[in-house]
View 1 (cartoon, rainbow, N blue to C red):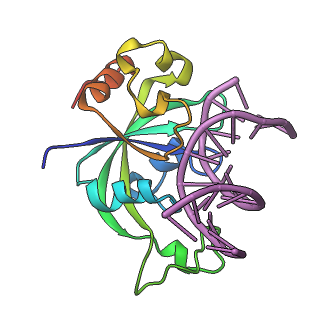
View 2: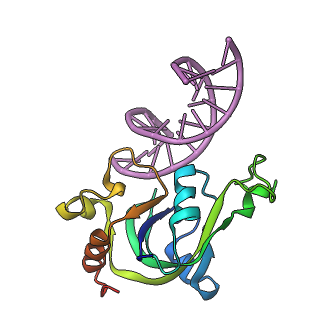
Length: 159
DNA sequence: GCCAACGTTGGC
DNA sequence: GCCAACGTTGGC
């Protein structure tokens, strides 16, 4: 299957791109997603080696700050089964897991973080889900064209 | 911190 | 299966 591209949102107060780069193997499991559409992308569509843009939400400045890649495809999000966990969901169980996650590995920070404001100013990016009004998905698909544009704007050689 | 947009839940 | 109520997201 052809390589796909994604944008994933994180609140840096909870888990920032630096946190990812400082993790063992620069890798983390993307737990806690409790939205069916976002889950379906992770469970059904993400492939090893897919490109991931890392976006910081709910902070000043909101921006795409780095790139990562998928290193483990969809598997059950076990945090749903821990009553102590913030993301506990009694309707999910190890036998019938409701939620999925993937592992991503940080690659590098953008030389130039691309703030929401900057992104809105780029006409070629107008069709990005991120820039659409009311778009709240924390995992979004991204076209190859937009991926390349963003890497270029961010000062990274396309890979 | 506010609140619009949107997703989910549950009574009917 | 509708839809009001409720909870959450996330830009501002």
